[in-house]
Length: 246
Image (tube, rainbow, N blue to C red):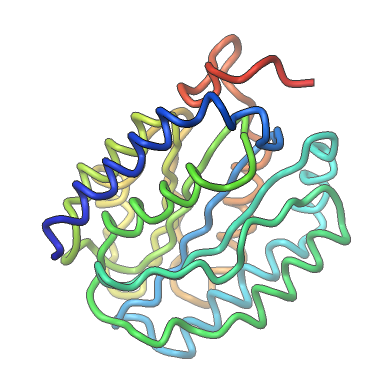
């Protein structure tokens, strides 16, 4: 069953690409679609999961992040939070939410703090997590000038679809993949993320020394992602079929 998953995903994405012109105008234009992936594999205990959730919520409450969101208030930023573990366990914990100001950021932070942990755990399936996030980007109700998958984790891929193949699928769809490497177990994980995980326009790796450092690192990461300017004169492949945005 696992070997069929990549083929099934490719078929789904192909079908969406073929059908997109008819429904593309129904998608709401935003400056950024941001899928935030939170590691809940076996290497992450409950306290570390809570530090991730609370740290992510704190980042959205940070004045600098809220200022950045206000700068994009005309179209806004669409955000989703996904928990991921092994090849069979990924879940959208906070569905796509439009952020245009302080009230939206505070509501999102409260939802992130309240989200329960994914019950099933297991190995570290980075490639499967990317595929899950890509499908979420392809099927939501937004059309972003930029689309970013933001992966937080503390380990290397040891399960699921090959990471390089999943990354290539995301890049082929004009999606940027960024990483936040938590170095509590693997001191050189940022090098692994840089070599094998990230890709796309403006991609980067941010580092958290441990889970206690997660909130500060995530705040810096969100600022960089929200404030990143699209490449002048370049439209991602999924945007080429859309009419000019207002």
